Length: 266
Image (cartoon, rainbow, N blue to C red):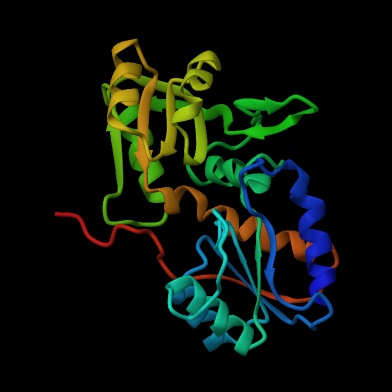
């Protein structure tokens, strides 16, 4: 398999044209003709992930978050990102990113998050794409059985990878929950969409005080705020499986590195 073979399958599942205009997706470094036998999937392109790739002998790292989201004029090894690029190129490790194009894909980041917290079927986008309503941001669906907010929060915490701050809940923990909205990564732009979808609770990440407070004052639904990294990590396994389904004969691995920015809570 060549790097081009792998990219073709990834881009069929996550078309770059569906990335936001401000995003930076696609091949960051690597020769399209280089052979690829091992592919490491991770949320963040950081030193710990590069170290894991080196140790395992990966030829390609596929990450969700871009390395140079805002662009650069230098890849000198005087910065962490420049050192990362130098390490990858020295060891013939390519780097590829699928970000907002993976967020809106079907299946995509929010589908994987929904499955991780117990939603089993009937998922629809919170904000469908105008040209393809099966795709879009976020997902909403129904639990197999109704439960309480407190029990659902415990289920969500168990289904997501552990982080220093776990999850935070806004709302009465005894309130009934059957319809759940989720969005991987920062999701406060979808608060109104979660309400319009009739969700009893909206699970996402990076909720800010004022939008969350005003949302709850207006009647909710309940909110669950998880770590950004944790809400996107479940996507990695599904992204890896896309290669096998697309006939790409490579070995895949989901990174064991916890790259959440927050390392400890008190």
